[in-house]
Image (cartoon, rainbow, N blue to C red; front, top):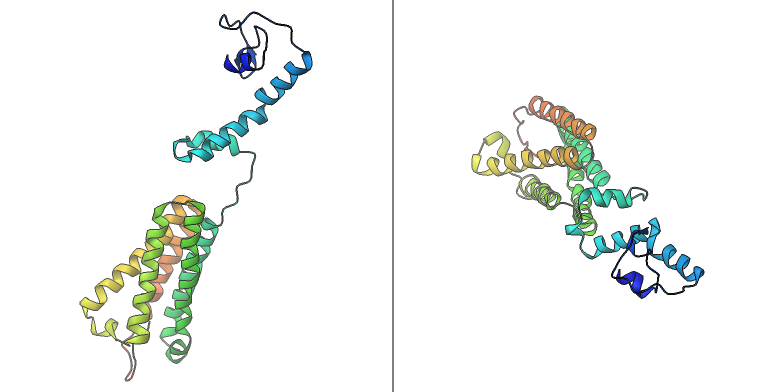
Length: 232
């Protein structure tokens, strides 16, 4: 009604989304230029204008916008996000490197001692993924599991490359317990986050790789030879 009065439209043009009905609050009909009426209706009631208004409202307060409404408004727009495929790629790299480490450990331990540090470089994309979480306003769960992954990499570097502790062979649970807890937690994060927020098929793939990783881990940890530092 207020829009109709503001535009000086006659009775019958006061309605919702251009659907006219008789409004007894409208002032007495006054002569109006046809061009003005068409211009007003074009600006106020076109689908583009309604879409623009809803997008503006969601941007002002996205937390209160229903998910189905957001989808209906942006369904014709291709929203590009980097975090989900980047997180999936990080999980693939984590599984691939760990499987490689476990497989070469048994017969090529000298090679592992020279190249095993490459696995620690995954900290760089993990930090960038945390930046993407903030930039794209994704779930806080990403930050939690990425933090667990970084903590695991830090403990790996501390045990195997700084202190050079053979905690796997000595079975010192004060050292082994936090390592195993972080190892299982970070792999769980790669499986469940991909499954829930990206794709079920990709989640199943991550789960299958984790099973392969566990099998490779179990069969490739013989007792170290003399002088073996137990790295990775």
